[in-house]
Every structure is written in C-alpha cells, then in structure tokens.
Length: 104
Image (cartoon, rainbow, N blue to C red; front, side, top):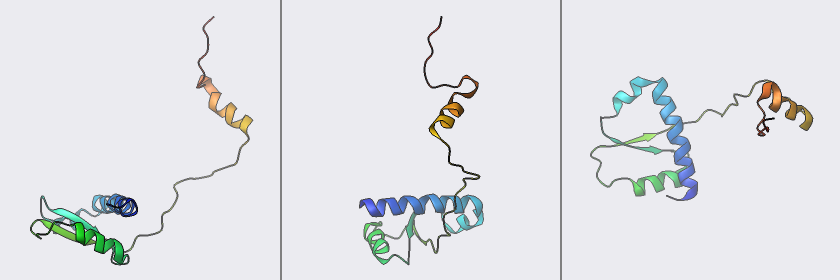
C-alpha cells in the first residue's frame, strides 16, 4: 500500500473502530469473519486503490463507505506557555527528577 494510502487507511481504521465501539448495532451488518474494506467515496483515488487491492471474490468481504469524518478536536485543556526554568521546576517537583542523584 502506498505510504499516503497506508496513513489514510490507518486513520479510517482507527475512526471506524471507535465508531463500532460506540455503535455496536452497526457491526450486526458485518458477518462474522468478514474482511472489512474501508472506502471513502469523497476520495476517488483512495477508493480505486482499495478496490484494486481488495480480495477478488466478494465472499466474506464487506465494503464500508466511511461517509464523512467530523473535525478532529483536541482534548488539551487549559494550556499555558511556561519558561524553561518553570518547566525544570515542574519536572523536579516532589523528587521526580529524571537525573540520577548520587547517594552520600
């Protein structure tokens, strides 16, 4: 698989897995043991590539058009810019220093 399509497939696989986890009824449409081929009808080149490399016999193969992906949202809350000195203080707070200390 080309690097670009491999990255796209990885993203779609992750999102589809999340979808199945939160919408288990959808998985009832997929027979046990079936190979799922994820397609994106909005990306014709990717879809052609996936169809070209899909198993030639449709037995035990299910094609899923992923539809539309919602925008990715960050889970970061309350970020702030800090100085190097502050970062050092935070990283050594409560004796959690990454430096090895010599025993006396």
